[in-house]
Image (cartoon, rainbow, N blue to C red; front, side, top):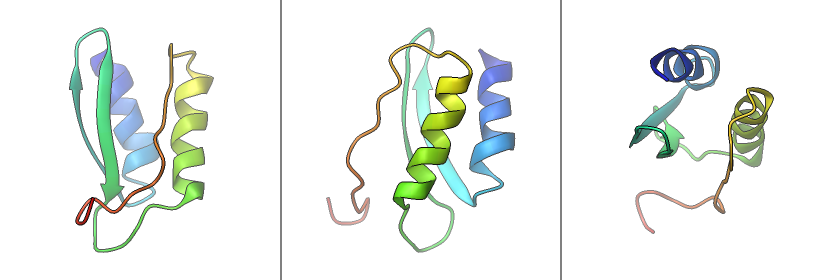
Amino acid sequence: IDKTVDDFINEVIEPNKLAFDGSGYLAWEGLICMQEIGKCTEEHQAIVRKWLEERKLDEVRTSELFDVWWD
């Protein structure tokens, strides 16, 4: 699991200037936002989902996009 999380951060989160806050053991959940002021886009969401699904992770779910500062 550690390698998967490290790869996720190195291959998806950092290159797209995103930040990830999450936790879990066998089941993980988390929040992804921008490293700097700004909003995640549907493109960011698609990149994250694609990477997770390509690794055959079970039950990949994403929420509607929302403003972490106001919602």
